[in-house]
Image (tube, rainbow, N blue to C red; front, side, top):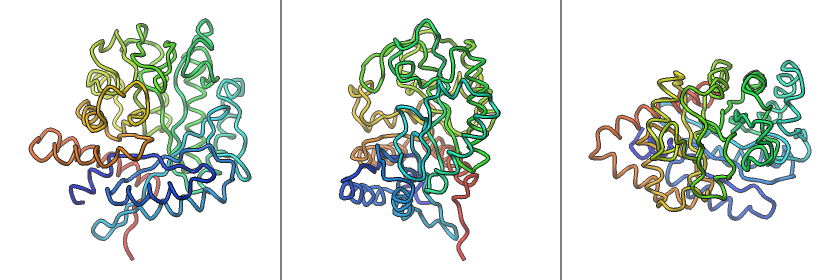
Length: 345
């Protein structure tokens, strides 16, 4: 790969699939292609159904890159959790209950249903779901928890309940050939503010020894290849930096403590209120320097500045250059597992 192709693999950018967004989508895809972006997230809501989304993912597939005698196809992702967080609906997509309702099923039932949902996504050309939610919201916190509990996005109120159902969800998706993402490490279950809309969201409960982190260990064992890092600050882990910019969180708690060797993806570094005090280019660099692999921005307009910053910085920073190499290898390993690397005829 060329340096620009390598850097492009480190980004996942938003593509609108809402009705009436066809012009914006075409412009976004052209811009992403110019910067060799290797992954996208489909942004709804769309009720057009699976056939319409399949037509979109076929266009996204044109972002695939020729590398030597191989072709590397893009990761195509979405946030198909269920309940209020289900961007893709309509014919061909099941209406998925919220995670809290899923948590009332047996693990076997959830695994079977998850395999069905994943097969629907796979048929529409989607190979990565930014789910399941691994956050544990206590019954005392409940809907006072802005990002998760308010929307019934948690499988349950204990680490044990969430662990089992997260693992079942992952296994069902794995059965259908769709990759999964545990989120939002190290957990958003004990905060009140939503980092999408609130600045300086802080957790004073979760530490590196917290039982809630066992959900991630079990999810990794079940086959999750991606972990999303949150935008909150965790005073018991690293009070000086948001998790997404913290090597203590990423390299320490996630890689060293839990042994995760897959792809570390950021929560949204585009439009989220929690990161607006930092320029977009600096957000991307800070995440990568903290040990992250895949920069997520739902705002594709930030891609030119972000990719240029990484390309410029790695030219004379050997540590960053080595990290880019390692991150690209992790991302390509995940793509290979999803059948996205093809030898030329």
